[in-house]
Length: 253
Figure 1 (cartoon, helix red, strand yellow):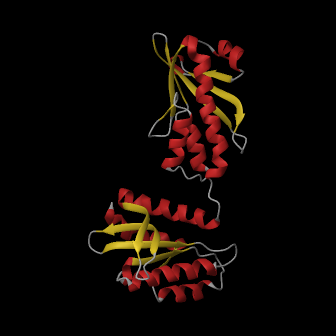
Figure 2 (tube, one colour; figure 1 turned 90 degrees about the vertical axis):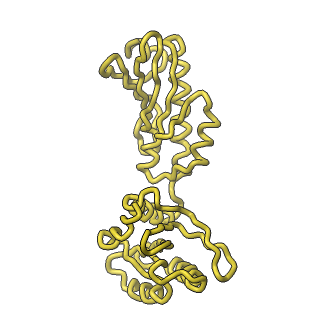
Figure 3 (tube, rainbow, N blue to C red; figure 1 turned 120 degrees about the horizontal axis):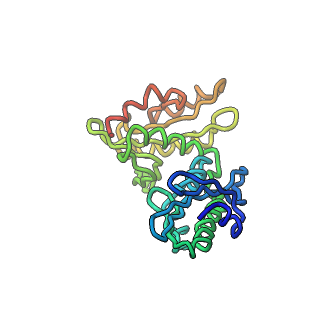
């Protein structure tokens, strides 16, 4: 198999790689103009591996998409002939006579992911900030970080806590990010977080276990007022100072 033979059938841009492998770039693109591509790798005999080496999902992740299990399962169910591995790679094998058909099947799966990508992006500034906080916490707490934990408040309502970490010496910590507006704190987010932490406090969570991570915008004259308000019911950590407070959660790892 060479690039010329493949181009005649599929219209790809193609370049040879080591050990007889081929790198393909399709004419289809993500929204940012980057072309979807695949790799063809000989397996011996008449067999080929067609894969994207996780490039498609890595592109979505780099753009901020939330790669949830239900979303990935929907891709798997729509394209059962293409394997979506736990590592995020699209994979299929084919004989040389099946190659064009199989490359098309893998490419169609990649195209479906590229079309879904805009709908997987955070819809609000609050969701984007939650993702940022989650990445920082996961880097130090690893698998001990729990996401989206429901807790019974003293009010009787189920409180959705974005992040929970259990530390060996100080117990369970409930962490609520509070995103800012474009120029200053978003008081709606502040009041909601304050109410949630008050409910946790009334339910018996210790002071050091209730934590708000607030997004602090430089020059925000209302930040101090928001921190004072929240400090009545919770510990307040500024996101820009995360290098000073993240280490306390490394004990969980």
